[in-house]
Structures are given as C-alpha cells and as structure tokens.
Length: 180
Image 1 (cartoon, helix red, strand yellow):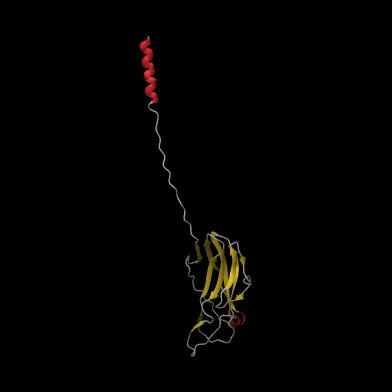
Image 2: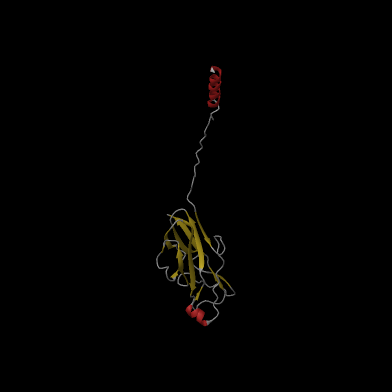
C-alpha cells in the first residue's frame, strides 16, 4: 500500500508545475489637441457663399430697398468664439456702361441683420435689426459656444435710392470667426 500513496503524491506535484505564467506590456497614448475653428456657408459647405443678387426692378424697390433671403453660416470650434463682419471695400465696384464709373459707398446702402442665432452666443451691437455695413470690422456674434454645429443666419437689405445709374454694383462681405 505504500507504493500507491507515493504515486498519488507525484501526480499532484506534476499538476502544480503546469500553472500559467503571464506577462504585461503598457503603452501611453497622448491626444495632442490644438485649437481649431472653421467658418463655412451651409449652402455651399465652403468658406465661399453663393452670390446674393438683389434685383431692383420697380420704383418701389428703389424707394423701399430690397431684402435677401436668409444666408446660413456654420462655425465649428473647440473653444468659445466671436464673429465679426465687414466689406472688402468701402465702395461697391461698378460694371456697366456709364463713364466715368459711379462710386456708390457701402455704408448707408447695404445693411445686414442676424435673422437666426444658434451659436449659444449673443447678437452683438445693433445687428438684431438691419445695421449698415462698412469696410471696418464690426462685432456680429459675441461669446459663441464651442461645438461642431453652431449656426447663424443673416439677411441683407440694400437701399441705394435713385442717385445711381443702371449696372451691377458688387462688394464682398467678409465674416471672421475668432476663438477667445
């Protein structure tokens, strides 16, 4: 009987020797974030919006002005932001048959208002109603919240009066979004 007991002891020792051995490895992953901001027109999904054509066809158009449809812009930013607006020139450029070319100032003729604001910020200055544009940057949206779909819409109103001859008068409106 002694021989059977010895065999059982050897068998138990063999099972203990088969225990698993483990090894671990660790790796650090760094997310190197930088400040990022983008301003685009939702209609074109680019920084260049479609041309806004304001047609003056009747005497009432000249007397009362013409208003555009809403133009929507979208800001994507990882920080709070402000938006300013200005024109690229103090006067409209003229294309037509009158010489010398008439000079129509932007100020007092072209107005802009914020017609919708989904930025989480506030409409700056007097842009809740039509405010005259100029070549000097003016605050449009203040303290917009960071996010990937912060939208606002603007509308234009032009009242050139009866002083200027027929032709096409053009100016670029420049929007700038700046992180705080």
